[in-house]
Length: 343
Image 1 (cartoon, one colour):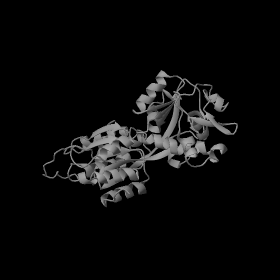
Image 2 (cartoon, helix red, strand yellow):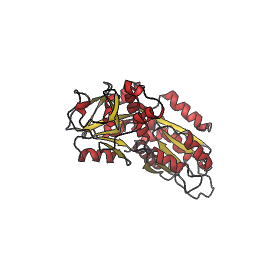
Image 3 (cartoon, rainbow, N blue to C red):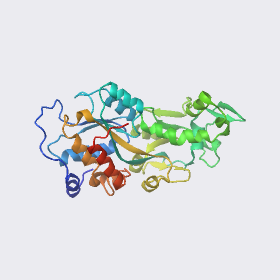
Image 4 (cartoon, helix red, strand yellow):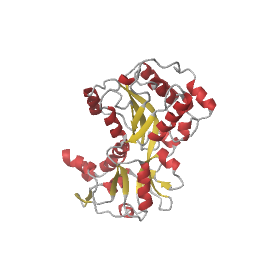
């Protein structure tokens, strides 16, 4: 996607676009890795950043999942380590500690907008009206039956609730390296688990296991790759229901049918309003030790957060990003300018 020249001009206006320092750099382009959800947004920005600011090379953007990107980010300081980690979840305290142990002590959190997590099936299959309880019952290793926990007996969605399609249960979810997986658990399976009185009555490790252990009989499929791999699974297994970011679904509406969750259709409007229950903020994390050493990091952050690039009516909104409110965007930029560090 190309930004029109007038939009680029607005994004660049007011930025520090002067000459790059004469310092000899071991590497002269920004390197980024991480979240597959943030990947398409970062890729658009990287291309247009390279086009708009000719004194900087186009950043290199790779995937690998939120956890994978932050793991690379925390490997240390220097030209052989990445400068920015994209993430669809906040950085964890343990990751901040891991970074610090490797010399990465100045971590700057940049919130870029919001996204929804959706459940979608093939366009030619049944329509799903899901609740967290439905999803937990489909995915859990054990479910309550007659007052006790038993191996999950459900093989079809209609066995869980007669209102659901009479399709085989095949749930395709992100692997543990993805921030989307954590949102799936925090906002779907864990709340669904908590709706069962039998599980509420459990204590300690037993309750934790009941909510966290997913079935291993082939009906729940972990995907370590990106959403295109999940989409491929739906092509191969007609009854499968996959977990996607809202922006990916929007780009594949001709192939996918989205489920409601709690009676709400996921959309830019329902996520932005908070009505749709399965949503999350999106981030990238900047390695402060590389600012002023790897050229263009300051300018990349400012460019990404400019209203023309990621605000209302921007190309990133057109690509599926739910923009930050103006006041929140201004605060993120102010925190970065002040070099506020993450946790």
